[in-house]
Length: 499
Image (cartoon, rainbow, N blue to C red):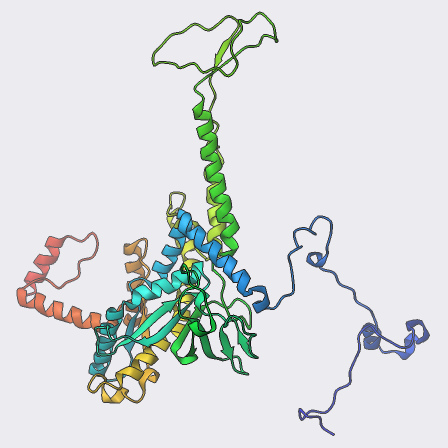
């Protein structure tokens, strides 16, 4: 008889257990495989052992679920500390700003991929006009900043009559504190910290506080909340564990390191200032009540510039040496900044804004991991944020007569499209241009791919180049490309002789 899976039932073999003692079974009666299965295997991992040396290190390790580990109180503490560090630490501020600028740049650009060029241009121009009207690139940079220092950010798709565009859709950003459960009421089944989920784990609606709880004199009550459907809310965060509902700051692992960096810097400055406060010290080697002239202890003597003086008998003049900053100060800052930036996949020279210790090869190698991380963030933002915004924009645009081509009024966001981001500038443009020419000559790349690396539309660039060449021919200018090191005069003469 077949089981529920359609396969015959298989025998169950228990390894390491037998009702009969091993010695009672004759070796000849057991096949070799059975004798192997009867052995008891005991394995150990060094990391699973608790000893006197590692007991304190692993004291805080727990088995909490992802949402219990980042409870509302834990997230509140992490947010406050991360925001404080970013606001007061120049390195922290520069790191998160650099991360947001490199990820968003001047903003993504929409490119429709239908076969009708005029329809594509029409939609792209309308979306670009709306994007500028609401300053979408700046809002995306704010969202990336908020994820780094607050862990998450919420965007509400709403109507704004002040938007200077045919589509008056707007994206209103709110901080994570405003999405929380109603105070004074026990959470319902499927509700977690202001988010209600269905049985499949999909968000249904969000409970949003109308005013930020940090505003002075604001006390939340049950009537100060709005319930917003999930279709109108964009929740941007990074889930590090399966089933995680809320986010924590990206710089969470580096918060203690930022504090240590600031403490060490302040200690170095304080030590240097303490040494500088004392110009000189008068001391004696004579024993107490010895032959040295008596002086008042801790007495201050003002010295004038270029002055010669005579000390009391038996006394010597000594000057304190400033031992700070220590010779390891710069090395300490480098190592701790390198560790801080590691949790963001950011190389040291980008985090520190200093490439003095790099050569060309090491700089390029370090940047490869960073740029790959940037592309991953951009892909995540396309899926979670940009496609949701484009879908809402299409829903509003179809209601405006004549704004969209007829071919796209029904398909909307399902129409083939892509997003262009700013390209990553090469350290050596000449080497990159040579490599690009080689790839094109070998047919291992395309113009579309090469222009996309720079965040540009290949069709627009080629049409622009065609117009330039047409104008150059009209003006009698040379269109022959000049290779590096080639004599411009020879090229001009050759072009003229050809006619």
